[in-house]
Length: 161
Image (cartoon, rainbow, N blue to C red; front, top):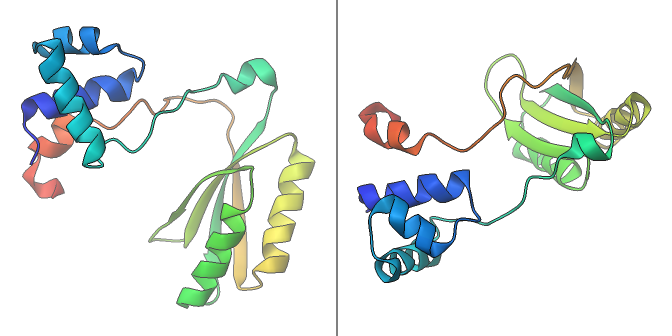
């Protein structure tokens, strides 16, 4: 079970994974050694999945970003498996979710251009004939960037468990 200090450490490193142990210890009001021990325990227990850097892709190029809502005609586990395997093998597929509602799957793509996006969706349809419909939403502007989960609010709400 995590205590409030563990949650604070997770929140802080989620916002800035490059925090030095000394800085982190000061922010959570622990000694550097105690903070380091907690951090190592959180890593060892799998609370921290990984560390990565967010690249400013807009400085490199101007990718076409799309969200595709995919509807399937068949809801067998094999159909979902085939689609998931195809998406996992597609470098331009950034995120993918099996969902409830009007569609079955949502995929976020970043492609060099719209022609490439159209090639990818055609390949998906060819390789997953159970795709009934792909509805595309081109991202015009990012209104809010994911900056981490609101851990304190999620853990504090008993209905979220």
